[in-house]
Length: 196
Image (cartoon, rainbow, N blue to C red; front, side):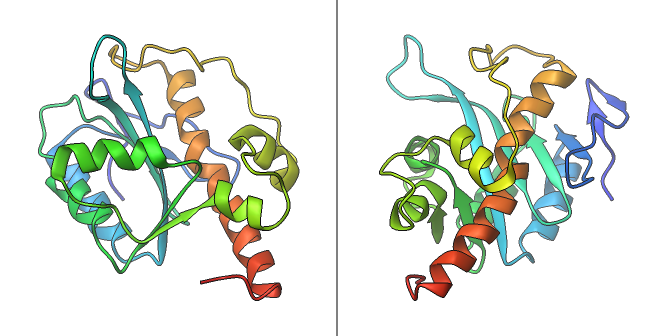
């Protein structure tokens, strides 16, 4: 398994609810290894944090990706190539699970003029199941996982480095709970013959 790296030091950041360690990825080697393994998964959960003040295009500040066994926060501000990340996101054999992902997807289209696909948007799936047209991620996690997400770091400056451990754990929550949400919603859609 790739080293847990934070501020150039190896260590464990935090354990998520499903007992996955959160990996901080800020080196080429770690990114290649993570993306190669994730590319073999049937799906990944995916979210971004960005900065959009005083800029026309959003500035990518953090990418969170989860698989069934790993959770990573990828630092796009680090001195590394993001090509392995782009290859994973544009890999049509891997389903990308997002929640209300329009802005997340827009960032990568702006960077590469390519569409991230295939996509499962949990907000759209929830609407098809009667949860309301635009249920928020926190409300959906509460209903499906019975977990109340903290909003403590909602206004964080995601461009600042180093990010504190609590901030990284908060960001990782956007993909860790999304696994459980995806599996629940996709099963419910299948029961109703509404899956793709």
